Length: 278
Image (cartoon, rainbow, N blue to C red):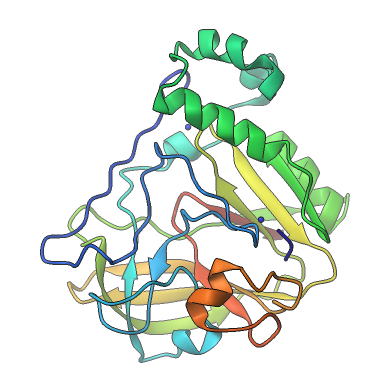
């Protein structure tokens, strides 16, 4: 890979550290904070996990061997009450709203946000990110409706193809956001082309979707059982070729790898999604 919600109310998710867990444990930032995009195209708002102790890890990414059945790993999943804020609005509700950094003053007025506020900054930086040139070897798009998602996906998968959306399940309010999970089952979803999409901070649902051309990715649905007995069915994506990635990629640095040495994998939080052929 190359260099990488519900009308006018801005969605705020506040995730805090669990009591007793060291502050160096990485976890999903609040969606009201502007994501920092990494050079491999991933957002730093991916869920975070590791394969060592709960108090001493700095991973965002991992490798395929970490989803062996029976293995226990610490994973942090965000609590989301429901997914409705992350559902696309109908195109007819959004098509008249400009989606351009050239219209930022108009957008401030339309969404009733003050310039310089966190909401305004999030809007501006999401638009800036969406308007950047795509990384080499990738087809990217920021999509604001299900219709645009379908058109984008069919342009990659095939114009007559049916598509489906795969998501991780929600955790319950009683589930710790960080705990040890045991891998109970891992099933590869044999799809061919895989299109990951990441929710971006915006007053309505916007997804940044990207597809690596001529690159093999593997997609899994992994069933995990937490220490408290709760289960999560989580989407797990592996980028099988990291050779085009920069040596400064945070994913590779955190894994202690050089480009091309290994696949790089990560779970998806429930607010992100993956599009695959039906």
